[in-house]
Image 1 (cartoon, rainbow, N blue to C red):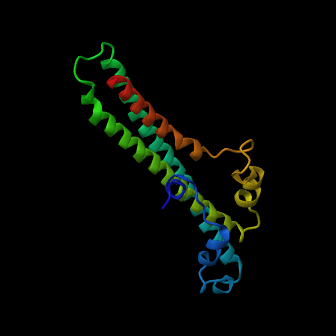
Image 2: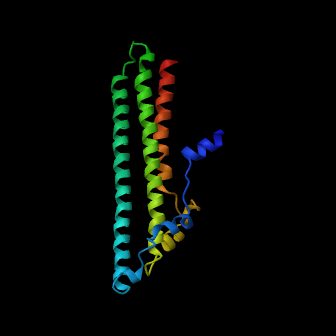
Image 3: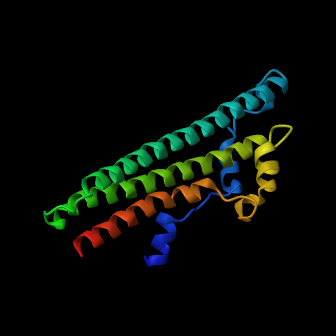
Length: 184
């Protein structure tokens, strides 16, 4: 694999098309005829839609909680460094290798956790869009997403998870730069 492929595969954002998922969503043995008339079937679709939309919202809440945790952890690390670095220590700055390495590793973990939540929610919203095909309205898939330029026009919408992924990268770069300054 070349560097571009690795970058795209592990750091980029790939999405699955709705047309790829559509054939796998609906149970082939269950349709409106399986229910008493079509009304109960439509009610079942609506209930599944509500449940699935709630699950997507919970993923977003967990992502937010994860970001809060890591942001607090990194803010505490900065406060700790600031507190103990008022007077430059006389010990070798090379003693900082392991703490800096630990901080960079947790930033990498944070980056990939946010990326994982982003991928999970992207898949959930594709499924929500498919469920909306069986409902009278498509508020998310057709209306809201179109109003936001389908994420392609940054003037209309810049997905938050794209920005969230840069926060751990900035912290990691700051840790490495501070280490280089301390050693130099």
